[in-house]
Length: 396
Image 1 (tube, rainbow, N blue to C red):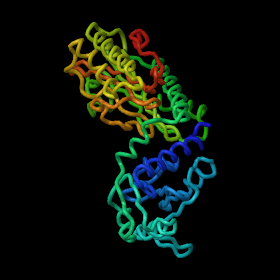
Image 2 (image 1 turned 180 degrees about the vertical axis):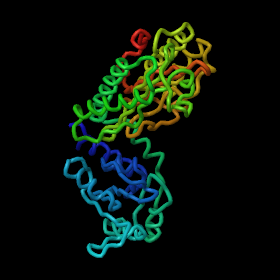
Image 3 (image 1 turned 45 degrees about the vertical axis):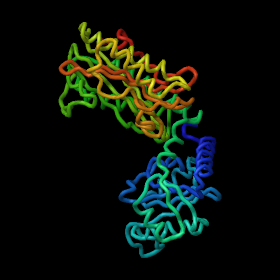
Image 4 (image 1 turned 135 degrees about the horizontal axis):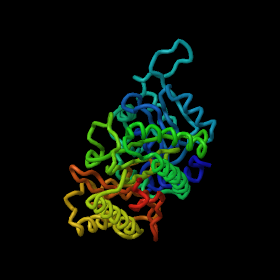
């Protein structure tokens, strides 16, 4: 089963209940897309600033959601597919109906207040992932309800992944490794970079359809940057018409999101034989990546991953070419928590997942970055296994 099942639901629900116990809460109310997904296994298809949503998870009782009518059939498809973790859904309209009338969007606070009252939460202490907005308006209709921001505490619940999540991440990582091999087969001088990436997108779609039929498959990012512009980590803003030339270094990035889980796979390539300067930067970036991975051990500091990579780079006297931290958490989003890994000194926890992606950016020459998705443990598990040595990454 490619989508996350009941074991993950029970795992996350227990995390929420335990946090309610610690914080003396009666319920959680989630209004952001990411925490809504965390609690329901449903990826919303609206922007909450425009069409508000809420998922309420009580300490005692069944969870419920309030969604915009635009999500009606999407929710039904997910329910029929056995993917939902919540069965009680109420929808509101954004236009008046002549028949089968529903609450309108301007009545969203009243609707949510009614649902809270009916669930026995009319006097509750409710934790939330974001303050203000329509939820605050709903709570003002229930003067005895306390709405408490618990964003920081909730983020901590997403650090350690359930084994089923990691198993899915392994499958996704394997797909990205397969696609890196397709890049190797198609790198050649004169190639239009956007054309190469679009061609790889088609390859990805075909293979994903074979491995994950009828699943929620997305490409969060798929792009390549080549030559001197790759010294800008996200490109120079002039991709149209850019080509891959003989002697260029090229960085490519593959980030799929499948059934709510993200993996990141990034490699540095050479189109033609690199010169001595390019080769040196490549080898130092690779050594930094490997040092960061070696430091991804449970019990060691989170910041130790960044420190280990930086030590390799500084020893080579390349410290001035660092422009970002070594990585970030991975999970529901590509950039997950913790986002402050370079300055976070708490011990790493088993089954956290990080990107390890130290980079060197040399103006006028290019960028050099290897990026792996790594599971924390007594021994780090590297999920992305495509080759990254100089010989493998040089296409002659």
